Structures are given as C-alpha cells and as structure tokens.
Image (cartoon, rainbow, N blue to C red; front, top):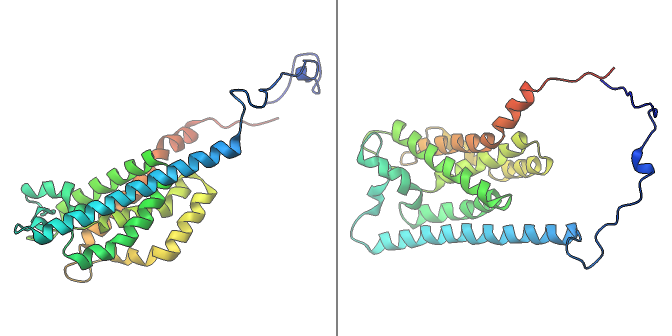
Length: 237
C-alpha cells in the first residue's frame, strides 16, 4: 500500500537539501576499486580450485600406484553392500580404482567437473562434495549386489555433473544456468550410466552420486525458498 502523510507531497526528497557527503579520496584507505578487487578475488578462488582438484587427482594416482606394488589388494577396502565392515568403504571407495584404465577414464572428468564445482566457491564446493560422497556411499551400500565391491571416483563425477546442471536453477543465477547447460552438452551423455547395464560397472554408485548432486544443489537454497513461500504478498493501491 502506498501513500504519504508527511505534508510535503510526493515529490519531496530530503536529500535535495542536504549537503553532499564526501566520499573516500583516491589513494586513501576505503577507496572502492570494485573491478580490481573483484578480479583479484576471482583469480584467488581459481588458483585454490586448481590446487585442490589437482591435489585430489595426485592422491588418486598415488593410491593406485601404491596399490600396484603392494601385495595386499587395496580395492577390497571399497563398499561391500550390507556388510558391517563394508561401511568403511563409504570413506575409501572414491579413492580406489580397478587398475590404471579405470583411473585414467575418471581423471579428466574429475579435473574438469571438480574445478567447476569449486571455482564458484571453495566452501560450498567442498560441502557439495561431502554430501555427494556420503549419499553415493550409503546408497550403494544399501542397494549394491550381494558379494560385490564398489570403488571409483565416478560416483563423485556423476554427483558433480548433476550439481552443476541444477545449481543455477535453484540459485536463480543466469550465468550458472548457462554453465549448467554447457556441462549438460559436453557431459550429459554420462547420465545414461545411472541405469543398469554393463557388468562390472557400479550403476548404483552412479545413480546415488547423481542423487547426491541434486541434494547438494538444492540444500543451500531450501530455506530461502521456504521463506519466500511464507512471506505475505503486498498489493499496491
């Protein structure tokens, strides 16, 4: 409802009679330099994202290298569905791979999608990864085939993929929607992997990784959407 009772009329502007407020002088502390500071912040986040995802890939390759020379079979530390000891596999499974071919096939998607998840915000990207990691692991433990062991970072790849595709829609961010569409064009065909298919491929890990990505994309904005729905609408007369 609009209206006024000040007596000055609708065109009164108190700032019209106030002396101008001096802004910060060039070179003084507090002087705003939005373009320079914004570029520096984006550059810093980009460097951190590259360092984190590169470090993660180095860990994956280091673990596989150790597994190749160690007489013990580290792959048995993956997720063993509905086995009590197999619960530890939720923690270790994304770090383990069934040979170099398996690791090589995951390396580029991990680098690309992991970077894109982190570059929009390190903290939020790490939180999303944790959500995907847990949901993928628990879902696989509950639904995986009897007597199987599930390993590989592809559960994270599928989670990052759905996270990137959907994040912009939940955030109502135009540039993130465009990024999600680009990711869908380049990597969307991977989503067929959530369906049962080739033997030896953990479609359960893919499916629940993708579900984890949806949850991770939705979770930060659920409170804001609920508040919008509860807020009363205003009608102007």
